[in-house]
Amino acid sequence: MDARAEAVRALPPIDECLRAAQANPALAGFSRIYLKLMVQRAQAELRAAILSGRDAIRRDRAAMIAAVARAVARAVAADEPRLRPVVNATGVVLHTNLGRAILAESAIEAVEMAARSAVNLEYDLETGARGDRDTIVEDEICALTGAEAATVVNNNAAAVVLALNSLAEGREVIVSRGEMIEIGGSFRLPDVMAKSGAIIREVGTTNRTHPGDYADAIGPETALLLKVHPSNYRVVGFTSEVALEELVEIGRARGIDVMEDLGSGAIVDLTEFGIPREPLVRERIAAGAAIVTFSGDKLLGGPQAGVIAGQRGPIERIKRNPLKRALRCDKLTLAALAATLRLYLRSGDLGEELPTIRLLGRRASEIGAIAPRAREIVAERLAGEYVVEIVDAASQVGSGAMPVEELKSVALRVSHPEKSANAIAAMFRRARIIGRVVDDSFHLDLRTVEDPAVFAVKLEAD
Ligand SMILES: *Cc1c(COP(=O)(O)O)cnc(C)c1O
Image (cartoon, rainbow, N blue to C red):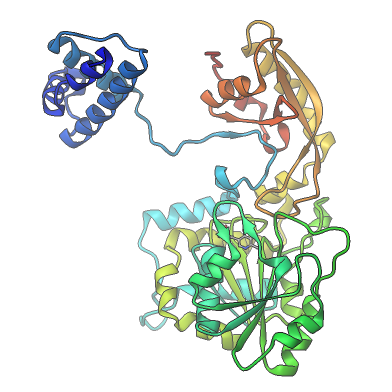
């Protein structure tokens, strides 16, 4: 047998290694279950290292046990929670993989309050009777969107599933082929619709769908007309889509409601902050959509949630669906969402208080103003032949909002005569700074970095 495989087979059993680890005074006080987990990880690592030739083969059993115990001690010393803060220097303000919106201070305080204390989540303080958790945010959502009623669930994907299941289970939902989209991270509209129990009735073609396509498809089995915001892609050239207003007309003539999945959905006109325009939820409700769904952690700038706003009748049906119970939000989310919505309702400075809007609204000149200091800090930490330059950049909203528009920004371009952009990205990643590789060079986009001091870290090339 191959010597490496043989060495791996001879690795001592978990229990023996565990006893050795427990004998180390530095590990006293850690639970047996925890140490066992760390032993399993250390063993798996040692196994991989031996198999790949990175680690020497030990013939002696005691030496192997000692190697595992040492690895456990090292791992315990370095063990940190898996969820950790990172520096978002990608320039993508609503980065799904980095947790999307950063909460406003008032929302953070609300989460802390709700975490620390019992709250009247479903409790009517006046009557002492059981309350409805939707009331925590419903008035605010209605005031901001013009909807008659609203409810919230865990995310927008859940909102779409719940709305379709409540309003169209076993019946047909008519949707344009041009809107049968996939949003990164496994939200594929056809799959989501199928899971909701609704029957998809596609109409039109990828690039063009006409009013008659919808009208002709309506039949006794039709439950809804669905419109979907194409989010992360755009159909350009020879195209035509049916406007929401027109769709509402078509539906109204036949007694069929229109639902719109808006994805991001803006609460206020963002052009006021220098941000490209996205459809306002309020406009879609005013145009006659019976149901509009959108995310809490996209342009709204709040916690992960899915808001369902619309006419009273369909919203009531959605609230009564037993699935609602499975998809409802917890007190922390509702606390954060309520505090975020209140920011929009008060006369405070939204562009200052809400991080999403603040970051999106930063002008290139403002971002450029911190660039020299950021450059200095990064350059100081890079020994050798690295070059750090200030360059123009284009950042993005992210999360499918405004896929084509780019926001003018400023970045640090970090390069090295021998190292690849990916190697440089990996070095920054080890310091938990996440940048972006653009045209084969590594960029730290400063749109999403407000304080250059975040770059004051130890950078280690491998
Ligand atoms: C983002 C998006 C979703 C999914 O929303 P989540 O809040 O991520 O679940 C659904 N539909 C559209 C159009 C979107 O843009």
